[in-house]
Length: 308
Image (cartoon, rainbow, N blue to C red):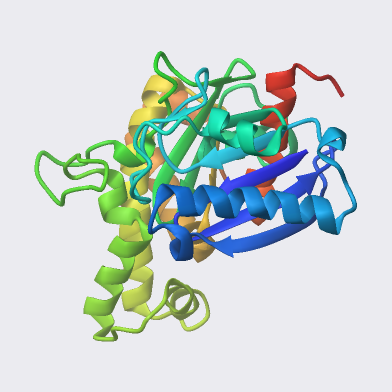
């Protein structure tokens, strides 16, 4: 399978076996191509063609292409509704555009839905039937597996935990909402806070994590604890309503590690209802950067109804 994991900053394109093994991958900078929708689509098509060429494959040898995108997707129609952090993509019929150019069956879905599929089948959610998967990065996304099946919702938009409002008023979110979780715990929000606390305009999330984990810097630890508490509050509502067995958390921000996860678990344990909190296990994702590609492969299998 050809698999594409389109991110707000970086896009991964790869070849994936049915077994879940990614045996070839390449990268491109999303930001370099976002000046227009056409520019980015052409770059993705060319990346697929280049992978086929490098691996001496023809399009007839590829069962399908799975594409994960960071925003609301109409899975049934192959339509991108919009991408909160990438401009110019409103109401884009990506499936039909891509299939006309590359002559391979194409299936598209929200990127976190695909990560959820991958973590549920091969990763930290393996063996569980009710899973919430959450990704923390440029945006904050979520995906749901209910009774062993990916749950997309009535308009294929379920799982958007990053756009749950935390307060009645607050910062405006890229989705158009106010005081969304993403506005407080997305990359940009954390960096704005860290730059102010440390009076350092060049501080990175990696440096902030090292300050907390390696140097035990109290200011850095508090930032990650505050971020974890906000995430825990949002997850408490999900735990009470959805009653999952597993919550899997991935994405770049999740690399902050101990202090972030301690605060998340402590908040859920304190605030969630007793029956629900007793069963839920909160774990870091296992598949790291390959989760989106593996999930894209599973999406194609689902779309073509292929069996192992």
